[in-house]
Image 1 (cartoon, rainbow, N blue to C red):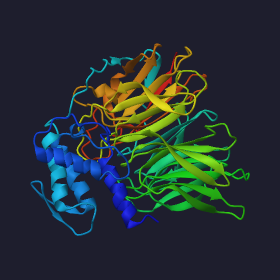
Image 2: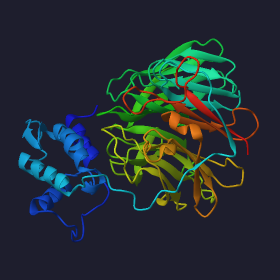
Image 3: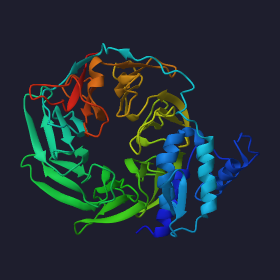
Length: 502
């Protein structure tokens, strides 16, 4: 169980981890006044879990004043009364009210009025994907919330889950027939096995600490579902492997949560059932991969953490069910980390990291110059350095696949928070690799007709070419209004199929 002190400290990390370290050397920045300088020093002092400090310029003044600082203040013991006025709640000994006021002064005095623009201009997106045929299936729900899409290459089927209707649908590529299985609210992950479907549901769509998520096993033939795990805290991803070499498949669950949460592995017991082992008792676990990264014969866990202390972590298998945590990459809390995958991007035989950051839903969205897709290359000793940045507002997921079969990896990507006004094509971008770390962006005409929240790649029609499916979500929360993706029932389509014709 997370202690109250740990929750407070982790929450402080949630706000204060950021871009640069100023622990050594002379501070060369220019401050508007002495109080701002002192406030910056106090911010550094209270980042007790690491040596990173958030830079005021990474958010605009309105976001700091109306959203981030009031939330941070409440969590560390200061109630916001408006007009940048705070009072103590008596629940913290981390700092005094005077210190807190100096910290807030620093962020409000030094932050820009408007979000900072990108230093380099984004490449123009070419509308038209000559190698792909776009199909908008007529199937839809009254309010599509397609939180999960999955291509099953073996059965030539497309699975997609609607988090609102509580259904898991399965269709052939032509959508001539569509079958469904009842599942819980907020389906977030699907793993397809020979005879069963492993379905993970959050239990709730909005940020929450409720422990009502479930892992279901659904028989493909009968449709009967069995609850394998319940009381999960807003789980968003599951991975499967024998982690302790006992011949039984274990499960790693990302319980993203909200204020609290955890990354855990569930040991498959000989007598039946599972035993939970917490790897990291903090919120924000969003995705894992299981692989023997150091070639010692034991399966390790690589995980992305968001929600504050963002980064990618290696949980090195020590044998006997024990894991040693090691941070591979460290990101600022403003990043909005949301997806990663291990893939050999440069063909040297070592797994690199492809990652996206673009979650923009914690407060009214603003454009952030650092949102996008990044590639971190492996130095062949499992140390990773950034080698590529593809700017993309609100980037939500990126998958590396050789779509045109020319021998190098291209990148398919989606955004739930694109720049709707200036770059609506950012909703989906296919980055075609032309070599020498040059990726040319392409999109399609109908991209602006949906809110793209889920994506998968794979051969869904049996022609040995990788296709793409992207899922549409309309949360009815003013993200944007659906426009042209309407059919006979007047509903927006649940997804779009991009069939590879290369």
